[in-house]
Length: 154
Image (cartoon, rainbow, N blue to C red; front, side):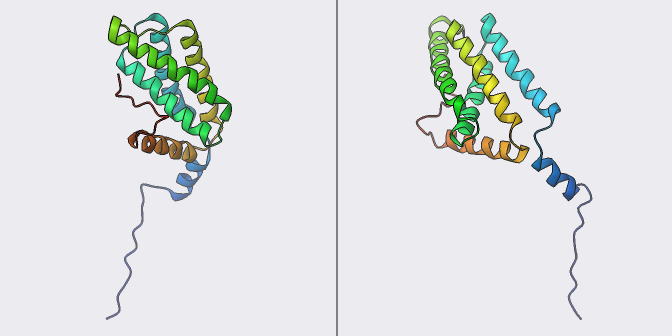
């Protein structure tokens, strides 16, 4: 008796739509959820009510933005990344001594600039490329690369 191939048909995933979704720029609904969280963190830093979660959120934005900039996607963001990195370090030191996570005026402006650069980076690449950059950032954080700030350092 001859062997027969049993082909699996994936009914839950439309391969054409999946390819189109991967090739297009990220959906506004998904980006809006990220934006709301990031803007809430910026607002918490502005009002002085930021905690460790907001610090971790902005550190994540910093790390992904820096990875994308080093990959050639908006390399002009590297200067804002350096300023924000120092501002987050200073905020962590203040948190240890004062118990409040606050930024200076320059640090808050650097945070806003970094957010603007990163938002432009996200909008200018496909969703698949954005996920590749996020995975690359996760690998850099795991490897403890010297230029990456780990979110658990505070």
